[in-house]
Length: 102
Image (cartoon, rainbow, N blue to C red; front, top):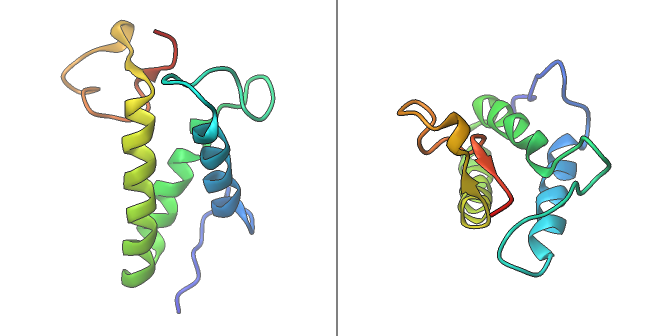
């Protein structure tokens, strides 16, 4: 099995990111609120790391993690709104151009 190489990731980074989303999505209500780790660290901060890992994983593991990421993206989209200050054709559908407040 090929080892995932990413300079900025540490052992357990994927588990920590998935756990961060899981905790946030357990919060009641329709919209996400507040920082979940500490001020300035948002749940979506680790989402880019998941993309990086997906690029390096072998087939079966990539499919499995890809399913989790698709569910995360769907729930994040359901619980956030598009950011009108950054709306453009390029940002449409991209997970990181979203805001939490209604």
